[in-house]
Length: 152
Image (cartoon, rainbow, N blue to C red; front, side, top):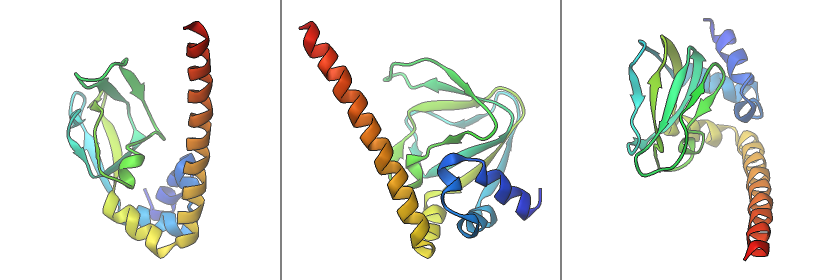
C-alpha cells in the first residue's frame, strides 16, 4: 500500500479520523506493519501494552484473560485494539490470536504521544472525544446503579 492508502485507511477509524490528515501522515510513516499466520498470538492477556493495533486485513480472536469474565470476540478490518494503551500504561485484558492470516498496524505509545505533541489541535479533538465517552459511560453506570438500588 502507498502512504496515501495508509492515511486513507487510518481515516476510516473513528478515533483516529478526528486527528486530521497531517497527524495521520505521521502515524502512517512511523507505524509498523505485522503479518501473522493463522494461529499466531499477537499478544497475551496480562502483558504490558505499549501501544495499539489496527487490524488491516484478516481476523483476530480476543480471548479474555483468566482473571476476567467475558466472552471471546472476533474482530476484523478497521478495528483498533488497545486504544487506551496509546495514551497510558495498561495490561492487555485479553489474548489476541489470528484466526486466519492477518495483517495489523502497530502504533506505539511513544509514536502516538509524539504525534500529539506536534499536533496540539489533534490532541484537543481526541481529548474531547474521550471526555464525551466518559460522560456517556458515567450516565450508563448511573442508570445501572439506580436500577440496582430499586431492586434492593
